[in-house]
Length: 421
Image 1 (tube, helix red, strand yellow):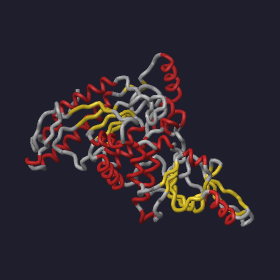
Image 2 (cartoon, rainbow, N blue to C red):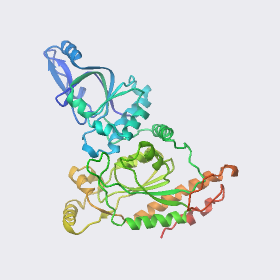
Image 3 (spheres, one colour):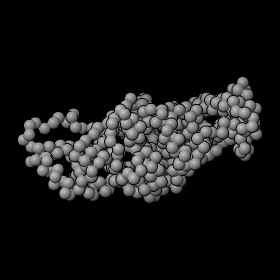
Image 4 (tube, helix red, strand yellow):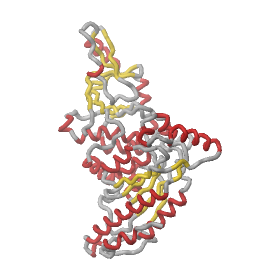
């Protein structure tokens, strides 16, 4: 499905809205369907009646005017100081999708990007700065939200895309961006196929006052059970198990390196999962979703990136006592009969669902983990068996069984991985 792209000529921004000028008395104003776009999420586009459009635009040119093509990377909410990287990614990757299909959209080169929902503080962080370098032409100018609001201006050409909650629409676009990120971060384009697989549990950072990217901890009350199952799976598969973390104190390169190093990733829901796009193809991602909370965008991101998405959706609220327990009981009374998909479409249900600690359904988790580990190990066995003995890895993972190319046997994979106890 293509990106929904709109191009506007001589579009202005003032008074917290985009303005399309038209001459009063020059016939009926155009219907809204001809100029509206879902690409304008935080600030909508409206008609502004003027006595003479040509003269009004000439006056605007003398005040503030930006020549060339401007891309508006918008999202509905500004998000404050804790805006996550997933929100930024969904904004800027719309431009990537358009640039990658120039023959379809025929949009001239973008010289300027406006971020109506991204502050200068957020924009200065290494993660968004690196994404802009990967995607946009060299020398592109950027305007953060506060500058847009502070200085009314008009733009010669404005491009917006209205496809929401989407990272990529084509696998080749995901693959190309991943390769570019690997080069920027100093990550080898090809994994050492004979190295022991790595199982990662992502421990989400707790939010800190004034933090730029952190969110809440998303507590897993039976996390020790989850880690125990992962340890057993790692031992049975000749892999290693790691507890990992990344937040605003980590550079873009560090986050790319971290996620590229995980063959199987287990993570609570959160904006940090946008980094799943840096995992290697044929890896596996298990998302631990809170009770009734399901966000399809990460499944779609994993799938288009060539990663096996393994859901953990039938989890329960992990608190029954205290003030939070009372709130949880009220929530379940009101929404327990809803599906997680229906809850996602309801603002209040969606907001409340991710505010409670989670108790992971261990039966479902074991099944998902077995599938993920089996797939990863089988893929590694096959690739390693194809390598000449002289190309064995010079570096072995500490604490993991030492192996040489061809030493692992595909026939033994199932016995080594399943069942997990």
